Amino acid sequence: MLPGVTCTRLGADRCPGLLKPFVAQDGAIIRLRVPGGRVRVSTLADLLAIGADHGAPLLSVTSRTNLQVRGLPDPLPEDVMVRAEATGLLPSPSHERARNILAAPLAPDLQPLVAELDAALCADPFLADLPGRFLFAVTDATGAVLTEPVDAAYQALTPTSGVIRLAGLGMPCARDDAVAHLLDRARLFLTHREGPRVWNIRDLPADSPVFAGLEPMPVDPAPPLTPGPVGGDLVAGIPLAMLRATHLSALVAITDDVVITPWRSLVVPSGAEFAADLEEAGFTVTESDPWARLSACTGAPWCARTSSPTMDLALESAARLGPDGPRLHVVGCERACGAPTLDHVLVVDPHSVDDILSADGALAR
Ligand code: SF4
Image (tube, rainbow, N blue to C red; front, side):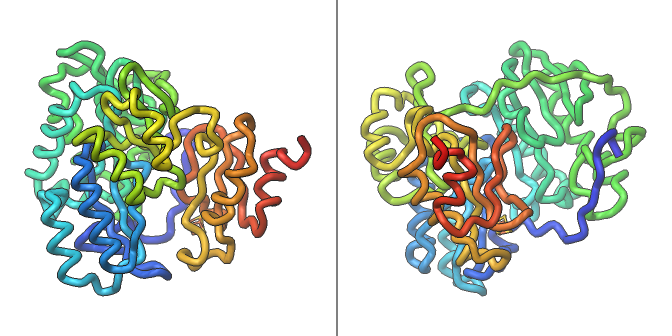
């Protein structure tokens, strides 16, 4: 293991896909990968409609910039399969759960490299065995998204050169060699990991061949994006990471494409001038909005591991939280699903709004 890392997983990798849904208390969960996070608004609308037509009207964005619908019938109706495939988000059925690729959300020039990496990944049958938890990243000189638990990343420092990064180690790499190099390391990971329950490069021993030729390379990534304008673009926060019909109605009038970030938000290209409209539609558009520092896991009644209605309580408490305070993540159990990578206060198994406000310190203020 790398220093300070202990691999204690006992369960199987249950990351869902479309062809391999996970069945939870409230029904089937499907997840569709969006390498690089860029997606058409019409595709979001199609997925929302598929869920709504089958009693599952919520579309979530995930921290790997993927899209998820939960509460679907089990087994999945043929209609769900056909319509979800028609979105184009399943180009390689064999690799559907392996296509987890983050990209710096404000660097559209990296998208061709993401597409190249995705295509090469899908072209190699061996890489279909990558765990659903294995995460690639492509970023720019700012190191955006390297705050996340990435396994193998290329950081572009100039248009033609950069570095490969793995678990705090790295080496220089030409841009033209980046895809081959990232995939070589992923193959080494599959070859040398000690069994299918080792999901990540950080879980390998320090002398693993995966790390051959790499040197310590500290990283100083840009912090996660917060809601608000960035130049002419807008980072629009999504309360509870749930996209609703009102969100999409507002987006469709503004843009064809958006970029999903790993931080429960979308980058809306040229969206800054439409911030008021998007706020009206339910997006968070300022850092001072309580939703910029409040999140929750799925909780009850959907998740069988808790009786705490985490999302309902978060919704209620948002109206009573002030703009300042710690980042709060409300969860139903110690698993702490969806916990942010930044410093935060975990509110575990709350059963009233006061439990959340107490954790925030709001009751004392
Ligand atoms: S943190 Fe616990 S209660 Fe919440 S979704 Fe995860 S497993 Fe369920």
